[in-house]
Each structure stands twice: as C-alpha cells, then as structure tokens.
Image 1 (cartoon, rainbow, N blue to C red):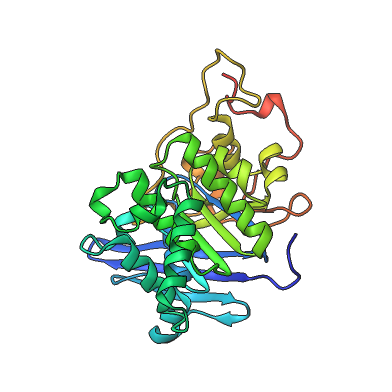
Image 2: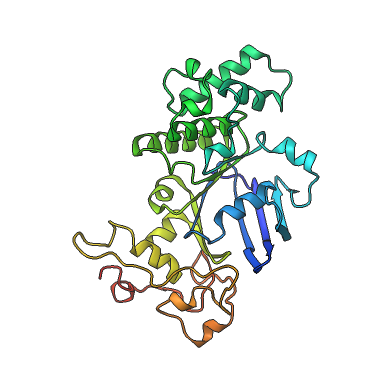
Length: 337
C-alpha cells in the first residue's frame, strides 16, 4: 500500500555525457514516481540508461556526465543541485544505493565491522559501539551470512564475490532508509540466496514503508518483487504501469519483445524463443525519432518523429505510435516461433 504523497518523484530528468566522441543522452526526459512502501522495477537492456538514472537520483554522476535538467523530488525536496554536504547526509542514511559491484561499497583495507559501524555512527553519533556492533551483526544475519559475529571481523578479500554482495546489501539496510536504489544487486548470488534477499527486501518495504527502485534486466525477479514497472530504452521511458498490467498485457513493442524472449508464459516448451532483431543503438548515435524504430516490427514512416508519452490504455504510460491494443496470437511478433 502506498501513501498519497510519493517518497520519490522524478520529473523530466536529463543526464548527458559530454565526451570527446560526442554528446550521449544517457537519460533523456525520464519521469516516474515511487510511493511509500512501493517497489518499482526499472528494466531494459544494457545501455538503456537504467543505472545512470539511479546514479543521477543519488547525485553520483561524475564528469563528463552532468544532470542538465529535470527534478528529483525526495519527500518534496529537490535533490538536483543540492549542496554536496546535504547530499552526504542523505546518502547511506535516508537514501541508500546497492551497487552491482560490491567493491564500490567496500574498502579493501578495512574490516567489515569498521565499515559497517562507521555507516551507522556517521549519521547518528549517539549510538554506542556495542549497539552499533549488534545492529551490524543482525544485518549480516538478515542477508544470510553464517556466523555473522565472527565474519564482522573479516576483511572483504576473505569473502567470496556473492558474500561481499550480501555485505553491501546489509550496509544499505543498516539505517532503515526511506529509499533504496538497488542496481542489479543479486546478479552474483545463487538462486537460494537471491530468493532470501528478495524476501527480505519485500519484508522491509512492507513493514517499514521503505521505497525501492530495483534496477535489473531480469523480468522474473521483477515479476516476483515489484509493484510497478518502468521499461527504458535509449535513455527514455517507453512503458510504465503496474507490474500485473504490464507483464500480462505489454503494450509497447519493445516490452512485448522482452517478454516474448523469456521462457514460460505463452512460450510453449520446445519452441524457439523470440529474439528482438539487431542491437540497442549507441547513445552517441541515436536514430532520429523513435530509438526502437530499426528493431521494431511495427516501425514505419511515422516513427521518424519522436513519439510522446500517451495513455492508450487505462493506468499505462506508453511512448509509441503503434502500441499493442488487444492483439493476441497474431501479433506476437514471433514470440512462439
């Protein structure tokens, strides 16, 4: 259940990279909201702008990248252009990020207990060492690390890659933030631990009202975790809506293609999975008009103009001139071929 006032509201966010090779519009007019206790899945192929959107929200875009437009409203406060000192007070405290590479979180020369306790005490100096240590131990146990009290005294290199990722996830959970941005955090984990992490993430959101953006290319993970989904392509949002609506009835041809390439569902056992033709375009050389035009089975001359976001069906935002509206088997674009 979501609160009437969203925890996060992103409005027309634009993040560009000014490189020697040219201008890359990694995020180009992205808008969405995440309510209190809500999990939003941010999905798309590599290079679609998912991770840069997450970095832009939390203010971690480095040169030559720059947020050039839009607003990021956290509980009504615009984070774009906020002084670095104020952002430091928010990061790791009220807004946390779980990186795809755990070594972006962990310092290789410090013990895990030192790093985790610093995360707590940096934002609350009233917490004593014993209380901080207990919270760290509980957090490690929460993400499935055995003998957490002993492992707190270890260094990052003494953990496997998957265990390091669990430590990074535990650090993000320490201060019970209002918003967590998770950038494919379970990629390096086995299926059992992945399921445990997803369960804990849902439990956290449900019990504390924490909001979450889960960035991934894995539609199966999103299906079991998220309340809503936002599909990105070429730096833009192409479709968003509730998780059930979008996965049961995809409207944008790109979303349709993504779901057609996933085993199960309408894809009968033994049949070839559908493959979206071609490759995602370089952000340095996006085509005129719709970025998906060259790969789209429905593309035509109208697509030479960039489509605006419309609402062809109830409670659905779609950027397309030729959305799927009620078609079934005959319009599956090879999903069952």
